[in-house]
Image 1 (cartoon, rainbow, N blue to C red):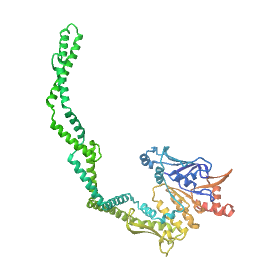
Image 2 (image 1 turned 180 degrees about the vertical axis):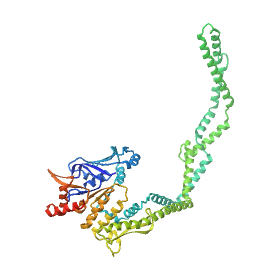
Image 3 (image 1 turned 45 degrees about the vertical axis):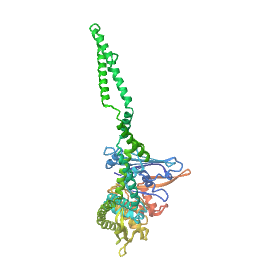
Image 4 (image 1 turned 90 degrees about the vertical axis):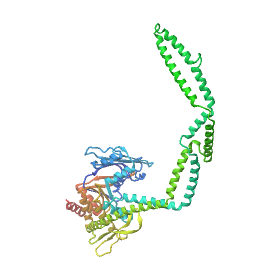
Length: 553
């Protein structure tokens, strides 16, 4: 999977660009100020870099960047998990697009679907690696140095970070518990007293509603009994009762239904009504048998409801909330008991520490194995970059205290030539040496990465002569297996490229615009000659440029 196409609209000093890229080693050259790094800036924007309005061409309303990568089959799983159409055709391409307007509003798409900057960054990490001209500066940062070694060792430290966080959380909890013992004890005593008070009542969920219903029934028991007795007499009493009247009507109609068939349905209705009246009579008699005034039970309910109301007022709760309040207090007390159990917290902290140390020791072993291998690989790369006899070392020092990153600190040391003592990379005086070391590291580590497109932004700064040619040959060698794109000012590097792009400035009215184009044949000879001798070409520089290109054929 490699970068196939870049399309720019109103980006910095480019009004419009539609550029196709090939496999192999491609260089971008051009005179100073022409904007050789514009394409790299565009790639960084479309893969999640900060949306800067300064990237919009002066006078334009917005900038629009699109890039296309061929054969995205390797990213199908990521695209599917993120909710994007992966394209199941083996020849399907991946299209990224991002716009930024003058108000700073940014929009992004992946294969035509809206995307976030975070998603673009995640995808960009899988698509290409960029090595900048000041890559050596990261070699002075402990985090970057450690990350480079871990990447070389193919070491995943996410579990280590997780164990560290768990240990720190357990330690923090223990420290807080130790500091808050007095407060915790007072709070536990308060809750314990409140729980004891309410537990005497032992309120049950839903009990308050039941109490109210029972109390209301007993308080009005006489009226309820009178109503039931009256209803019973009306339904099944003297001759004028409902059951007597309904039965008389039924018999009258039933006696004549042989003459009037329509009476039959009315008889059925009356039969049903009589059955319902009989059911009601049965229910009312049962109710009267089991119902009495029961003043003792009423007094019990009065007393319990008085206790209930008293506790509700004391703790400023609605009566029906008492049962839930008691359960909540018990849960809170259990948490406080756990927080006050220093022995349990100490055990938890010790277990978390042991888990971290086990994982950290595993990481330390992996780093110890990878460190000399990385040092040897970079030392070997240095020999061809004008640093014969130079030596690169990866030192591991035990840290004063355990860290989220492990138990050791990682430091890069370098000796620029034979017989010199290795010193920390940040203390190497020569800028040229720093650039060459960075390039050696870039070449060494890039061969291990998964990204198929490697971008070098003037990492050859500070080198020249035979070393510059070696740099070019190294990049050309990388281009056999991957797509390599390099911004360079060195003709020796440019001459080694499979494809040569030139960035040129042009005046259009009051504006200065840049254009990017592929050069071949005599045009390429002319560009190499310009890089050799400046804008005024001579027969000597042209001949030298032609010789350099022929030497790469």
